[in-house]
Image (cartoon, rainbow, N blue to C red):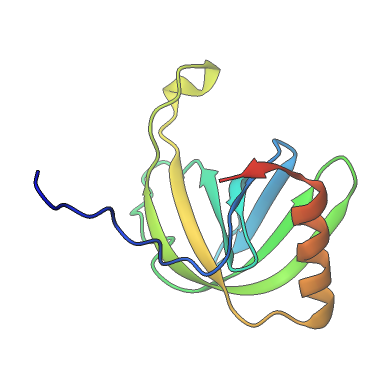
Length: 131
């Protein structure tokens, strides 16, 4: 009521909505594939389907991440990331409604010059709009 303030945005980089053709593969102890929801110079958020019986421990540590675009074969490989969050995503009303997706947000570690260049290309060419 009275003098409530909106939460301050803490992200340093503007996020962009990814096109449906952008995916992430993360490699902790086993491979996970997810569709990228949004991406920035600082990190990425993606939806994935957990394995049955998954203890949800998947996104509680760091991991290596590959980001790729399926139509052009552009590929950002081997980015070290820190997990920021891993939470249930809202249920979708579609064919996929039977599955409970999770949303994982990661922060990129240090990027090499080549990785940084590839990330810039993906953001410039395979995102739909700014968030």
